Amino acid sequence: MIMCRRATELMSQRLDRPLRWSERISLRFHLSMCGACCQCNRQFELLHRAGDRFTSAPSAEEPSSSNQE
Ligand SMILES: [Zn+2]
Image 1 (spheres, protein in one colour):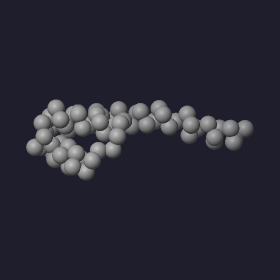
Image 2 (cartoon, rainbow, N blue to C red):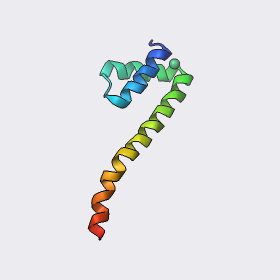
Image 3 (cartoon, rainbow, N blue to C red):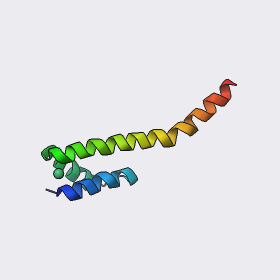
C-alpha cells in the first residue's frame, strides 16, 4: 500500500497529466482505506473543476455571444 504522502503526490500530479494505470489503482486503493486522503482528494477534485471552468469559460462563451449580435 502506498503512503499518504505518495497518494497526495499522485492527486496533485493527476491535475497536470493523466496517471498511469498502476498509479490510478494505487491511489484508488489508498483512498478506499484512508479517510484523510479521501477528504484531500475531494478538495483536489473541487480545485480541478474550478480550474476547468476558469480556462474553458471565456473561449466557450465567445462564439455564442458574438453569434447573438
Ligand atoms: Zn492516506
